[in-house]
Length: 27
Image (cartoon, rainbow, N blue to C red; front, side):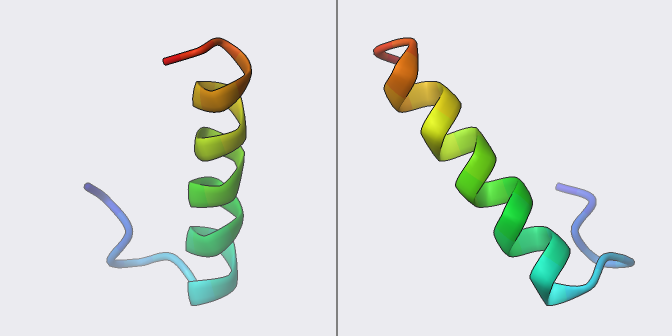
């Protein structure tokens, strides 16, 4: 995971977006 150079806010956004996508597609 390349969350090292990112800001915590960006990481949170990315994680939230991925979670939403996964939940939306029933993954």
